[in-house]
Image (cartoon, rainbow, N blue to C red; front, side):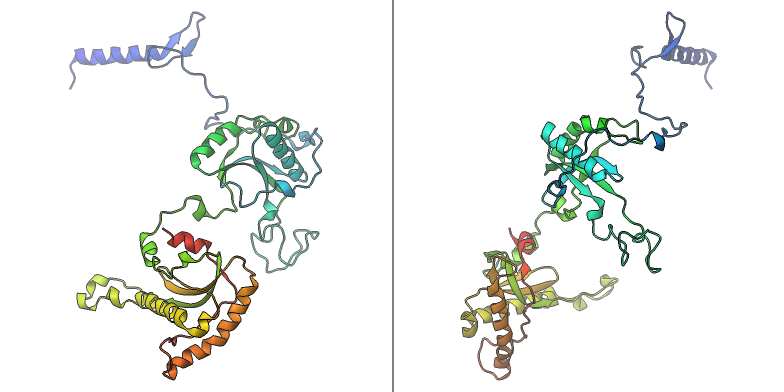
Length: 377
């Protein structure tokens, strides 16, 4: 229990601190002050909405007027967003309605011409499956459709066009661009009516990414050293000079679920040297080696390559620069004719280069860019 003198001191301290927080001006009014030094507090942000207050009202529909500027009528295709843009960008503005594309085009042209910024248009209807209802023409009302159509496909996409800015490759550069874009007040925006009357210019823009760029390319992972080591041989797919090749065989490992492997004795646990994945890799290497030594295969004049990953091993033949290379069709036909004789050599005991597994050439060439990116050091 505090003494009377201590309690009196605490009361005096509380009274003095309360008096310091509210000073009376010479005009008789109170003004808020800072807790340090008695300096006046910073002015309140007018854009901050109190928790007890409702959201600001929208502009009434009858007050929304068409744009006063002359909207462009030129083709919009040269300004559309593609997967080559970005990947880190800034979403500047979204337009909806009948004139959404024209308004977006007006903003894009001003950003490019007046502010020298790379701006693009992204239309919602360009996304697959969002522009039409299955089996229903666009001219038919939305309530006329097949009974088996479910959400969200049964709702048509509204006319919507977004303006994205930037071709940044890092988050740091995206941050700088965002700070620049949000301060811009385009002239065309001032001549367009909007229900959100509190928005000024591009102050409500925010950071985003190019939706056409896959997520794995936004933040690429580090190299898997195991993958690099497994594909460091002379017949590795990394040594293929072309972008495309023909897959002729695939050897896969086994996948099992072991709920609690520590309950089994050590001598029953699987040995890595006898794993199916290692056996698959050996089979792929042996096939590539035998094909390279076979006289009939050598007359093809095409190299053979092998790629190993964490689930399988594949064998490729040939190096091509285009997916429709005419040489690939010829190589595939000849490989089909060679498939049975190569296996028959093994069954008849003729030829040390006979194959134990039938080769099955793929119907189309394989793009090696992603494969090489994973296994290249």
